[in-house]
Amino acid sequence: MPHAAELYLPRLRPAYRTEGGAAYLGDSLELLAHLPDDSVQLVMTSPPFALLRQKEYGNRDEAEYVEWLAQFAALVRQKLRPDGSFVLDLGGAYRRGIPSRSLYNFRVLLKFCDELGFHLAEDFYWFNPSKLPSPIEWVNKRKIRVKDAVNTVWWFSKTEWPKADVSQVLTEYSDRMKKLISDPAAYYTPAERPSGHNIGASFGKDNGGAIPPNLLQIPNSEAGGQYLTACRRVGVKSHPARFPARLPEFFIRFLTEPGDLVLDIFGGSNTTGRVAQTEGRAWLTFEQNAEYLAASTFRFMEKSASVSELNDVYTAILRGESLDLSHLNAPLLKFA
Image (cartoon, rainbow, N blue to C red):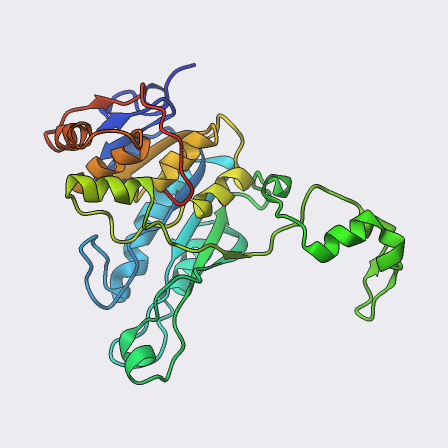
């Protein structure tokens, strides 16, 4: 089977490729234009957020953010397969100088659905229990707000009926549910509930796990992970705004099948590509910052790689070389 690089972007030269996919250095607007229409099953990404203070990874002011992001979304819609999905992780923000929330992430939602033709398949909320209290002014100093620990994650689709299979993301049953399944008659009597729902005996059937809620509780705590460890060893700056591997893992398993193409248009440290490869999906990643893209190669290198080996790969990317890392098969460590 042709490699993802040859199959989807045959005229472009990747910064690096692996057994499962390829990463490209450049502006996503330009790179997206080269992709065939109706080719991508899932775009999973976390763009720079619309924050008041400028960050080193290039966020925009909230006033211009929605229109800026809509440029990418319009192209994404063209490139998605008819039953494809676009999952967008957006953090919250406060308005300048006052303890009142910005509505930018909701304006993005309305813009994409009302003007670009997307459907909101479902709204998700990522709760990061390990997030530090913020913003400092309102939470730590004045103590008039609680910490902001939930991101909105919009699941957009090209059609009202996107590909999805919840059986691929079932969660472990609670201890109480396990007892019910083991002996339904002792714990549950089928009856109509006050709400009017009629729940029958099949409620006690073992379906292999529980259906997850749209609140995803995933700590973002990868201090000892493979990527950060390699960055420290080589002495390079890691990407400051990474999402944990379990976030793209959930949506990749939920919305795609092995062999489908997964794309991240704001690749950063390439968590999405690494997880997609582990899950047997083809992947492409676009990132315009050469340092971030070079360091993302560490996710595909063995934990035992020497500082010299890590540095050689990193500097080769910065020199503009195109590397083939297909011979590397580093395992994906949890939260790495």
